[in-house]
Image 1 (cartoon, rainbow, N blue to C red):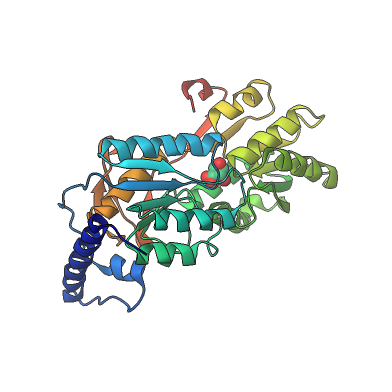
Image 2: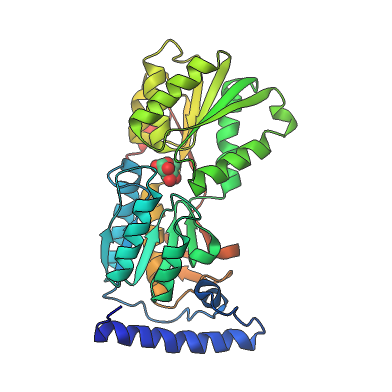
Amino acid sequence: MLRTPARRASVLVAAVSSLSLLTAGCGEGDAPADGDTATNAKNAEASPNAPTRTGLTVGFLPKQVNTPYFSVADQGGERAVKSLGSTFKEVGTDQGADATGQVSHINDLTKQEVDAIAVSALDPDALCDALKQAMEEGVKVVTYDSDTKPECRYAFVSPASAEDIAVRQLELLGEQIGYQGDIAILSAARTATNQNAWISSIKEELADPRYKDMRLVEVAYGDDEAEKSYQEAEKLLGKHGKLKGIISPTTNGIKAAAKYLSQSSYKGKVKLTGLGAPNDMRPYIEDGTVEAFLLWDPAKLGELAGHAAVALASGQITGREGQMFLAGDMGWFKLGENGVITLGDPTVFNSRNIDDYDF
Ligand code: RAM
């Protein structure tokens, strides 16, 4: 790749500083593994007091563009990146299951020599080679919302722990159906890292004695597409005559399932919960199709990802557990195991509080 002098200089600075960081890390007896950019960098010391670099370009690559959840999240990212004196750009495809499209966008961003990429991964494996290549070229990679493998990024900005998100959805449904009956899940893309993590936690949690009378009969995939999710919801109801409830851990899925239920004879009888955006779900709370669902503030998630991307590109963090960085007004955040940065607890929305939220 041809590099501009400025880019060469920044790569050189990065190389020199990562060399000294690595040396510092080695002094503590944790020498980096050879040949793995992310592992090497994560093992490196950060310079928490390094000045925040300005004039950077940070590329956001959501799972899907032009969808409310990611529009709000990426506006948060834009706010953070601009407030730090850098340039924000968003790229992506409008499909909810196009991991190949994400790979092309990662390669393009690398060719364009962006300083950092924030990506919500549609597939933990498919993106890895492209992300590793980006990191080789000096791009700082952070995942947000949906992770890849830890060795294919430096840090992951997670809404909350996978267990919390899963367990709370199951609890909400359990309460609504009296902890009894057949249930199904309507997910997003079959490969989505975040949904799959939540689904496996739901399955584990179902082994708890209080769920002994609840049975998961099917996991369906609507690819975060409105029409496909609507049809999958309809199929679930058609196939499973005794279905008592659906969990849809995706903003697009729950909205489509709510639309279907609200127009059907199952309205109010088959319960639906999951992860939804208050503005999408307000009509279905008002018409009694849905009692309660949860989510975090996507704007805050994006904002945190923007701050994390710039902190990585400034050398203030490297992805190692225990490091801390300041995320503007949101305060200080600490990196957990495997470079995971957690936003906080999700909020439960119902008829009592939904009008307090506007996203
Ligand atoms: C959809 C996407 C996203 C997920 C939310 C809850 O918008 O699948 O990845 O975090 O739902």
